[in-house]
Image (cartoon, rainbow, N blue to C red; front, side):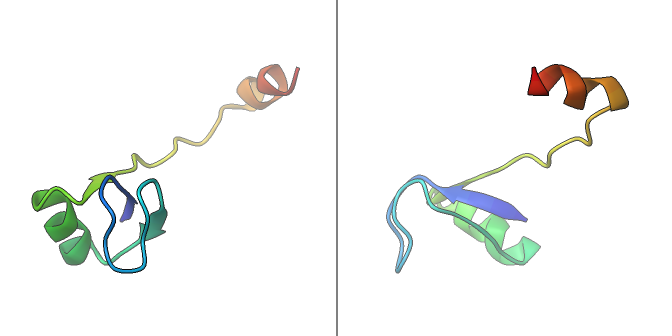
Length: 53
């Protein structure tokens, strides 16, 4: 699970993002050190072309 840190923690600064095992990520979120980064949805065929313009 990808998380973004909202408070400095060990070697991570505020705004850093990294992937963690789900249990560890939920613990970091639970104690207020990080927030979950939502999974990206795959773009539909026409969306990539429209975004590139």
